[in-house]
Image (cartoon, rainbow, N blue to C red; front, side, top):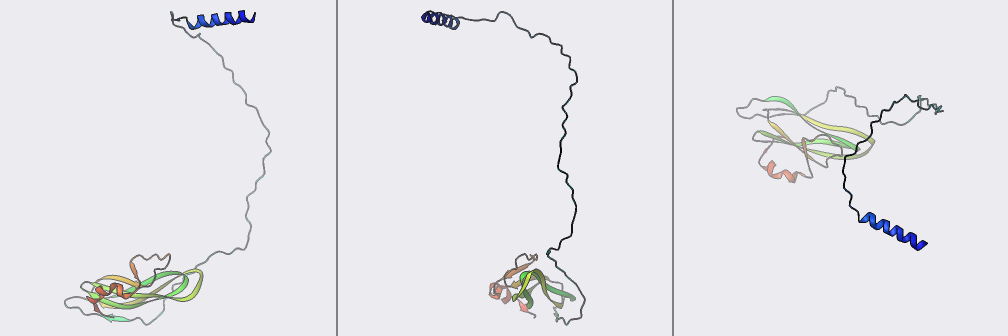
Length: 188
């Protein structure tokens, strides 16, 4: 009996495999008219956390930098430069640096005239005093009676971290600019 079923199944399978099917007519889906009625979403009752946002006063440490600008009468060096066929005017030559971590001093060491340019050489030195995570600005200035000339600043010393002044060139020693200074006249 089992053999007979296997034989019939095999014959049916062979007849399906060996047949050729050709479509003789196009099919068409039936038209469906559906009426849709409004439904209703389920409702839920949710107990949620009650959140209140308030403020309270606490004592904490905050950084505070206070800069107080006051006018004071101080002795400022004045250099008077006479150049042939040039009108002179009074101007202030200033150099400054913003330092952090340790206190520094900056001082104008020399001014040199070369053609139509002034070369200002300053020195920035650490005093070793801890600034206790604060920042300070140090400066030096000189009043110059001279023709209006272009000014190039060189500062001997290491550029302080975070210094915002990019118009100054920091050098390790005066020997780095010795060739420029040898072609100039020292006026201070």
